[in-house]
Length: 337
Image 1 (cartoon, rainbow, N blue to C red):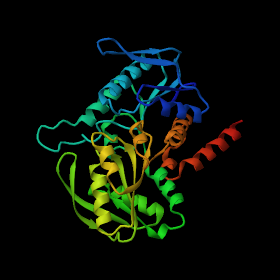
Image 2: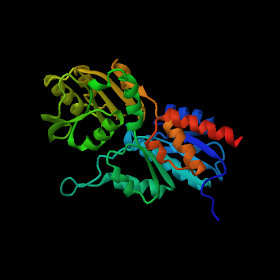
Image 3: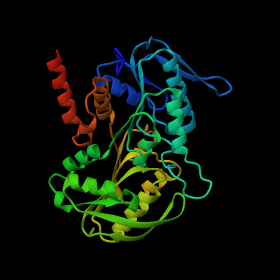
Image 4: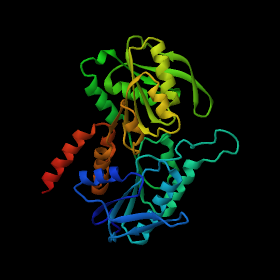
């Protein structure tokens, strides 16, 4: 009977986010696998895997962030290299899944690029995918292999619960648009506070206009939550609208800090007091702003990887904050010894 996983666990990384990969490996008491990903003079990517992976359970950490296409090709070529080197199982750990916003045909003759990328990853030889906060959860169905879809809400909610523990009655969670209502409602339930919705319209891509605020935000500490902040148009327009309509303070939190184009300038001019982002994407731009605070996803990713390798349920990760789960993992390791 074929084993469900390899004899030993190995963590490798592409070039997109080596720091996160090293942090994940350290959490698992492992060293990062020895590999090189470079380019030829004409721009073609080549990979050297400098240690054996035969019979191993390989976890490849690679966010498909900017430069998106280069990082996707690195991911595909590394998966192919591991497959041809006889790895027992290959899990693509993709903290940020690029092209996730192209998940449907919005108009005639549109591509569904998220489905194409899913097919490429499967065709390259991945056996499993581990990702965080897909822009559209139904993208899980684009894959014909198992997908473990972690959520950023438990980490962010735990942070705000500790930050506002003495004045939680003043807090209101804000959905920056109708697409984030389910996330905001779940967030508000975790903190046991009310939530409101920014009613906006988008006349063209990356441009938004606020029409109304649905809910009571007067004299509230408003926390806007979203899965990603790209050009920061939605979040900053919403922050200005909240302050104009009587909010006391505005905070913001997201899983993926893309921060492209005019994002930094918009955030500088916004009334947002603090922006919390998970490090699914490297945050070099974050250093340009004092209001930005990063939270690591390494603990939650390490716990998920450990559970996948041990054939233990990953679903508790959707419920409990990371530090509790890490404590439980340490207890399991002690019992095993």
